[in-house]
Image (cartoon, rainbow, N blue to C red; front, side, top):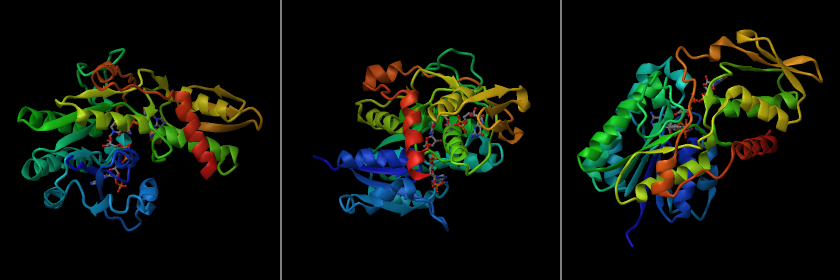
Length: 341
Ligand code: NAP
Ligand code: F7E
């Protein structure tokens, strides 16, 4: 049997770490690209780095998506059979502050990696981390692979470039797939994303570490799934005979406010929402104090108001469907946070 060798960019991130674990369980050799940092944050892959079992199966290399000579060197040396491009400036709000950098990493970075593959491992299968943010200001009840894109942030526009570029390499005969993934969360999500921020913040309020949590738009709706399940779909795409693009989602959507309500209820708060707009607050009825307030800083200049994905193509062709409910996901995040708080 031929050796399966995976190269993962974004290995230190939420998805990169879950994918590495999945592939190692499937007996792959896994190479990850990490950025050099003065204070490296390797928490998500700590258990892999410390595992004796994987000491000759899991390797890290310094690199950056914006450094094409480094990517060429790594792909030439590793000769991966599968490449997963998960690295990105992935924060939508921040992309308004650093649009050029976001374009370089998410757009040109994808080009650099595709070129490295074309030059040094043209038979490799390639996964591009596309996103439901591409649908932007859509007016559809569900979004699927045929729904027109209307990206409305520097982040989603950089990802649109990478999406079409990936398709272009497919037209030229390369095995490349776009996974159009809707929001997916886990205990490994960074605290700057709203689900983790809410879970962490409300537990900190309960434990009296902070007094209140500041949020932005409470009325955006998202289709939130569980990251550990979503990376399975990435792998499944690359095991098909033919490359294609797939929506991965749960098919259900709720507001940020309803997400907050679920967390508050699970943690036993008695509370009441009052006011509206930027004066809306959530009051803890036991203490009489506001525990959630709105801060304009967290609003975006242009917002994606509604996302709900139709994953029927993935269900049919990949035999993939989400198993955990949003309530399961919230419990997983809460339990992890309580254990580590
Ligand atoms: P994440 O936790 O933010 O991880 C991003 C990873 O990219 C980190 O390992 C980060 O390294 C790395 N990175 C950033 N800039 C880089 C650069 N210039 N060169 C090399 N590496 C770089 O993101 P995620 O949630 O795992 O998402 C994975 C991918 O899926 C991303 O491309 C994201 O845009 C996309 N996506 C995510 C979702 C979602 O809901 N999670 C949905 C759709 C698409 P550091 O540790 O050094 O920062
Ligand atoms: O925001 C609202 C905010 O930053 C979700 C990335 O993984 O998924 C993610 O992008 C919603 C937005 O994720 C706060 O306005 C309210 O409507 O958690 P988020 P995102 O922007 O949906 C997509 C699919 C990706 O591809 C991205 O890489 O929550 N919101 N108050 C807030 N958001 C944040 N971050 N912080 C707040 O205080």
